[in-house]
Amino acid sequence: VSLETALAGALEGGPVLTDPALTASYETDWTGAFSGRARCVVSPATADAVGRVLRVCASYGVGVVVQGGNTGLVGGSVPGGGEVVLSTRKLCGLGPVDPVARQVTAGAGVPLAQVQRAARGAGLSYGIDFAARDSATIGGTVATNAGGVRVLAHGTTRAQVLGVEAVLADGSVLRRLGGLAKDATGYDLAALLTGSEGTLAVLTAVRLRLLPPDPPLQTALVGLAGLAEGLVVLSRVPDLHAAEVMDRAGVSLVCAVAGLAEPLPAVHPAYLLIEAPDLAALADLAGPGELDAVVAADGADRARLWAYRERHSEAIATRGVPVKLDVALPLAALPAFAAELPGVLAAGTRRVVFGHLGDGNLHVNLLGAAPSDADAVLRLVAACGGSIGAEHGVGRAKVSWLHLSRSPAEIAAMRAVKAALDPGGLLNPGVLLPT
Ligand SMILES: Cc1cc2nc3c(=O)[nH]c(=O)nc-3n(C[C@H](O)[C@H](O)[C@H](O)COP(=O)(O)OP(=O)(O)OC[C@H]3O[C@@H](n4cnc5c(N)ncnc54)[C@H](O)[C@@H]3O)c2cc1C
Image 1 (tube, rainbow, N blue to C red):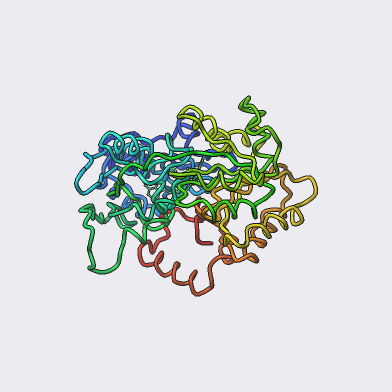
Image 2: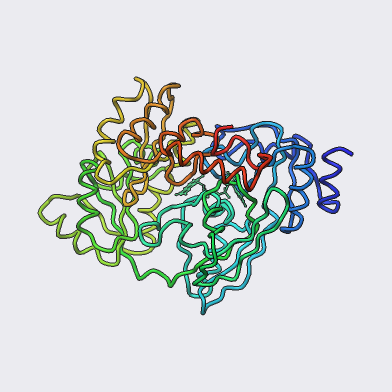
């Protein structure tokens, strides 16, 4: 029988999409920069069905690409060519919030925003938030160890994961959703799968930690001469919950595309959006005339200030398909990196740089990039002691630069883990580890 027929059997008659009109949206990522043909697209609704699908694919020797919301920015969620796309959109069950343990179990395909709403409904909050919240799935956020705008206060997704249900390449199901606060019985498999980018297992559900709601926060947008001044703000304002940086090019573009007014009376080389329970220290800095800043007066004003940051990705996308390089740097190295960046880019490449300053995480977006630009930027990052992938992962986009951030011994250990859990190289071939 054909692979497609065998898959239909594994799905107990569920659809196996092969019509290009139906598979097209699974074959190109959010940026439009990555695309590849799928052999077919399947959407199993249970962990057991995922197991049957993987066993069929293994017996036919066909690779499987796992896809959640397809908002990942490094090409990891779309086929390289000829794989089966396993969409998690039907793994969409959301359990009840346990208000005592402060936990919830979410299917891998549940959108991030739905978990946030459920937490709010129980008087709690979820520690992860970013602009793609309506489309990005919980499985995708765990597979990429997503970060976002609350990492300063609550850590990355890794810090929210208490357990997972996942299916290995041989179809066996790992189920550990008990949410025990303490469990010292060997390897932490949930932690291993967090950030594995679909190369070790298909996550089907996740037990998540919830938090008390944040205290009331004040929000301010500050004009900066450069990143060094931003670091001064970071060091002086206590208990920051967010510290988002944007360069002038990005703020200009957002104003033009979204029809927003300039955020501050004067034009600045950079801007910092900060939130903390008390911004009195900022007033002390601004008092001597050192800083130009505006503090949000109410909720609507807060949303207005956040729009300058949150509308960056869509504004950039209106100007073409950018090369997106998400990188992390030691805080002390940020000013030197920013100073050297223009010099390593080809003449004519336009750049928009924004990101999570408190985490040393910059999103370097290049428009009209030359072929040499990505290599030059990632080598500069490595020379500054940084990481070539901060929160979107390695995907297909950065596979050939993994060695800049990981030693030969580390890559060998990662390969040994991959070979042990997925000996046939079935899951996400070509993603994360060079083939
Ligand atoms: C406007 C915008 C803003 C963003 N801001 C941020 C940000 O601030 N911080 C941040 O971290 N990211 C950000 N991202 C990137 C992206 O949203 C995250 O990486 C997100 O976690 C991806 O989730 P997804 O469901 O779309 O995953 P996909 O894009 O579908 O997949 C991403 C990777 O995870 C794997 N995967 C997905 N689901 C599973 C699963 N169930 N089991 C195993 N592997 C799986 C895929 O194979 C792929 O390798 C942003 C994206 C956009 C478009």
